[in-house]
Image (cartoon, rainbow, N blue to C red):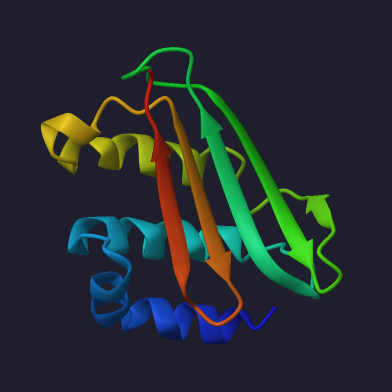
Length: 125
């Protein structure tokens, strides 16, 4: 993966965030998370994904998984710079979300090799 390219794109993220519908706060959070996710990532990665699952909305901890997707579309588990830091960063950032978006039970962050990202939240039904 072009780690430097991802970090450069995230550094100029306000324009990217606007296009993706992310707030400035979410974009800054993703930038902090990306710094850790790209470390130790497999060299041929096209996407890096972090998935957090909580038992209840607002839980302070949950289950986290990290995986890289290669050029063949295969997923490979890996450990970023720290197993806890990226997930805790996103959990802490939820306090800055509007009230109606704070109650998520799962979050999926995907970083693409071109520097774009997707951040999706799942809510209880």
